[in-house]
Length: 131
Image (cartoon, rainbow, N blue to C red; front, side):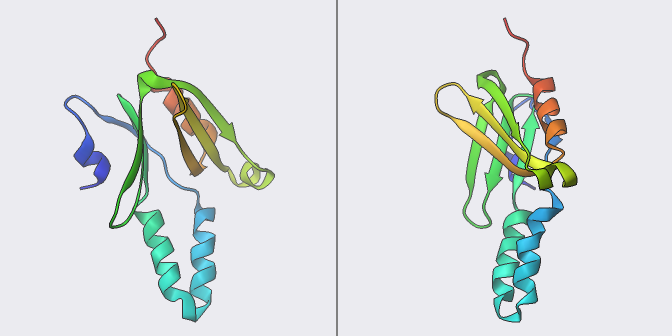
């Protein structure tokens, strides 16, 4: 059972899970090509494997960590802006960064997500209507 599944509150459902783009595996492949650094490649692969980025009907969740855990969560009602950034390579390969800014100084960054425009659209689609 993933962190996301364990942390759902009563009535909360996962709307979408955001995947990292395949380019995030390039450092893993690079380290694996150097036989001496296979443990580094395995560690980086596990970091990517245990990364969770999703939006539920109540909050946005970003979790990293293999043994230890670090999460960034934001209630949907606290979201103020959603910014997207794509480099030229990101445009060609369809990956980018999505920064979600909340009230105050809090923000959550979804790095190297596949289809960042779709991610932005999905998050905006579950935001509560303004009063």
